[in-house]
Length: 231
Length: 232
Image (cartoon, helix red, strand yellow):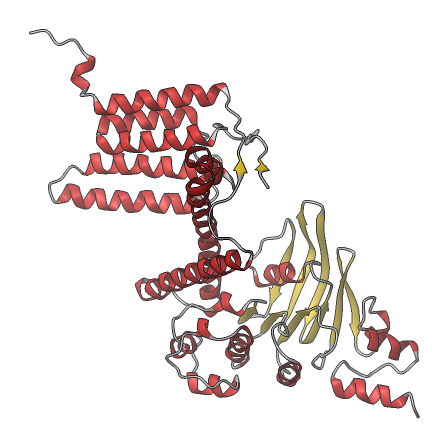
């Protein structure tokens, strides 16, 4: 029986339409990766059209990732490479990813995939995306629990504990995926499904989407093309 | 040594928990229905969860341990031997104590839920703590294991042991009884007097106290003794 979704509107969110949000994120991520000017344009886009760090759930994780990128950038700079470019481009990609993850709501992937790929392959891909998002959320919970367990045992945080911790997290994620697969099979799932997503597209979605396209073209066109250079 | 909960308040939407009380040395049983806030209270007492209001003062407590309801939350190593080492214990002793028939190289996460619970409790109970907080220790255990655990917990005669549970049938020896009722922690006092004030007491305890045959404690032996007195 077809399930009709409610319009995917969030009063607190900036971009309501997950199709535009995902497409914008894909475009600006490529733009940031291509060039340093693209990364700067994406940073400007991020400052204008996202709530920035206000809605980030785990700011320590984001800070940790930016610090890690900073360390790698310094190493690149020491070895004679362009560390600043690396830091700007990947730092901006992390910010875009954080924004996308924060704005993501359960059902967004499924809705966009079904819209793009219909009820067979679209549904399958959307469901895989939803499961991945759920597991990513639970990984953060597992990580927090392990930190508490280590604190209770009086264990120090270090390289020796990092490997088993990561392996436990992977083990838990695989176990959970296995259980979800079994549950779906028990409930009679084979492939595909029926879903009728309804989207809510606001003016801000359209403006930020168009700007994301502009940022993308700005990154692929050489900067000199924007200026009339006369000899 | 003691732990003082001073106007502790936890607020989550419509749900709230208010706690006032002092836990001194001995075995305390905190009873309450599922969702009443036992685990939240245990986390607050361990200093892991920060309540909306109020303070938790631990006086003279140098060592603290919290056993959460889910044993897998405590696993930080990939084999039983390594996990025991992370507790500062020898795995052979723990395996014997937990009555497990496994090798030290086995992953603790490959054990069944009940086995993992026994393993975790064996690690916890192998050492003495000034404050031991045990959240739902009887979950995932069968009746025989529950009785064995009760015997083990009853031997804890030093420090403060606080057991948070909604268990209704098998209990260890308890010195003080507490109950979370209508969003508030109530101190019911020392046993056996506290049993008559227990609002959501197990049916058997309620029946015995109504008949004026209040058991001296909550241990299976004490309840059996009280039940036998009915026919005297």
